[in-house]
Image (cartoon, rainbow, N blue to C red; front, side):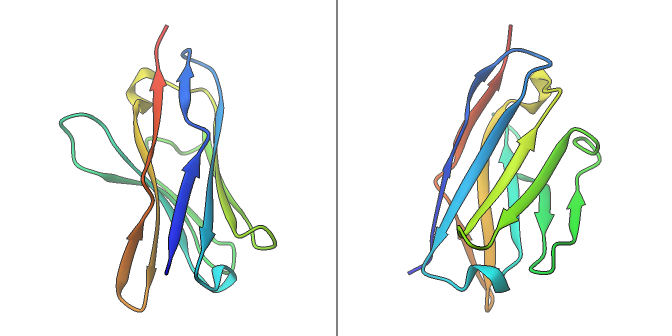
Amino acid sequence: QVQLVESGGGLVQPGGSLRLSCAASGMIFSSAAMGWYRQAPGKQRELVAIITSGGRRNYADSVMGRFTISRDNAKNTVYLQMNSLKPADTAVYYCNTVLYGDVYWGQGTQVTVSS
C-alpha cells in the first residue's frame, strides 16, 4: 500500500532553515503529483506547495520566495526546503498525494519556529 513518511522537522530560530523530506513507497512515484500541507494549532490544514510529475511547482502566497519544493524520482522522495522561517510557519507539516481519487497522507512532522 501507499506509504508516505516525513522527516526533518524540529525547532529552529526565526530566520533559520529546515529541509523536510517525504519518502514514498507502494506507488509509481515519478507519475504522481506530490504536495506539502501544514496545520497549525486551531487552524485548518492548508496547502503549502505542490510539484507535478513534470516538475511544475505552485506555492502558497505566504511561503512564496522562501520555500522550495523539489523531487528526486530516483529516491522516491519529495523535499521542502524552508528558508527565512517565521513563527507563523510553526505547524505540523504533512506530505500528500492523490492517486486515482484516493488521498494519502503521511504522519506529519512538527516544525516549530521560536527564539
